[in-house]
Length: 420
Image (cartoon, rainbow, N blue to C red):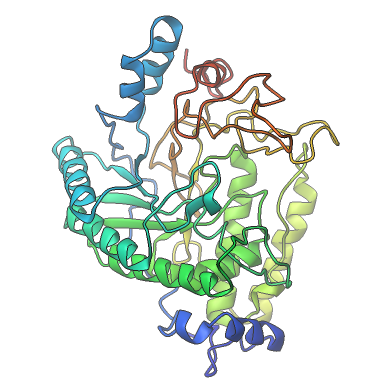
């Protein structure tokens, strides 16, 4: 297998990309070969094994403090399997929590979905700010999580936004991204990749873990951009990547995007293609354009042919999709209404999506999961205003992660398929 990393540890098919990789410390980031990019542990595709419903989930806890319709809504959502977010604590505390979750799930013949969300400087210190104090603390926390899982079975979602929001990152096209906290510099980018590479190595070594890393979403980054980040983060050791966590994009868009990202990763890792050459752009706008998508598909077909490679969806990286709130697809506000519409932040009139399941008839998709807890707020969305209220909803929304009864009611009412 031909790695996309040449002898000088750069992207050998593109000199400028090679120089960029060297500038951000690729020698350290990519010391281990990515030749295992098609590796990772396996899951039976289209499995009907049940997902774990946590009887002590944050939704169950929220329901205990509610009354009337709000309580009924929370209890309805609590019937479905959702991710359990592990966001803080000492290594010993996360070990104990993971051990109990995995053990309880195994006793019911089910698989838990664990969301590791504790990377230093997570969410660029915005609505979901927090995380471990530094790389050493994070490494210890990850090892605590791994010890808690042990030989048990679990789906692990590693650091939502961990690759989408990187401190002091510069894109493949040379654009400086907006997360540039004071007191840091480009070394923060290098450190983020080191943290994720270490976590991937530790968690992927567990025999019962299906590990997925941050693939962002269909409306966010170009396929080549996120594929490059996944490879730099050693996603070759993972089963694949997750899409749409805490977002609302439709299954139709996500499935197409997942294929492009997987194909790009294969072309880069096996054929030496520069990720900048991978076709496709973020899928945005109110309407779908299947004709344009077919053109992107054809462009990937041409690249596989040109590089004398055979597309192999079974062996390539797979995706899991967060369908917790995408029943109505993404929100498209009126043009020019907001300076920053924050379309991912508590948008109005969205609905629950496809029910959580490991059954899939798409060769690129392993599962449809409720990773984000539907009914929990995305944060106090200002949409480019001074706040404190959300101008779209005319109210101050609950803090990120807190129960948002009004949104829960919308999600149930507008669910597709329906739940009532």
